[in-house]
Length: 403
Image (cartoon, rainbow, N blue to C red):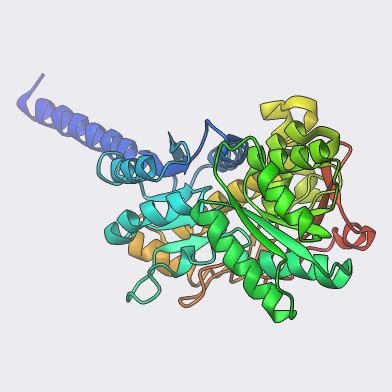
């Protein structure tokens, strides 16, 4: 081999290696943090959210990924504990170098954890937590990196009150709320909405996570003449409220936040849980082609018991959150946090989701994708959540979009 040939061969090899390295770099995955409770009392929400996220990522990757790169979920179980959420946030930022994070089921965990992403200028898409303050935690700062695609409590609480007071005509209502940030902030929203109707609750009672006996709280509500119980809590404790009513032989309607749709409420309450009503952004019925495809794919992939998602709302919102982020990354043509945030605040192309079609879902001053016209009332019937009102079911094929 001549000297010239050797040089040419070496040059060609170098170019090939450089090209291979370039392809390898281009194919590096885009890491998306996924934080939620995958064990414990909140797990039916967390696991359903995580599975919705997994399904979306699988679909996107099969279609070529984003910017020619696959998405990679970096999943962490926060156990619904604030301190664990803080630890995970720091790990996702400093060790895993995530581009963005989706999740947060529990309002308290979100409020404790998302400040680290705010400081790091990494977008967070809350896809389940509903505390009204979540997207406003940093609204006074020049840039806000916290977004959400779930129905916040300033939407849900007025809906609950409208259902109980106006639609169903109850004059005396009691509030039972858990002692977490979620429960107490929700209680405040309920009391504010009741005040707007000129109603004062006849009893306001608190309970703790893992409480199994609600007799004292229910007796106070009963003795005060409550005609309905308005709730803010999560599945296991909500089931104890229903079971406590059965034990006392006192049955009044339960109307509460969306968590009355959780599998561990429905299953643990059994017949005593029937009839409970709650706002829902998604009910597991194939009311349009997008929802039908999502339900079929979810059931085929995860094979849940009785062909019922443990938390359909969490699954659908988890799924949609990934598509919203993917659209922003694509539009930004970058994985840089500030550029993704700017893209989310001005998405040029509508994103077809399961819950809704997101057309300009966010702006610089509004980081909540869901407005009051989107949720409808669900009811526990026959061990699952169905539409509470036939008119809502009839109209469900028409996608309600943000106003």
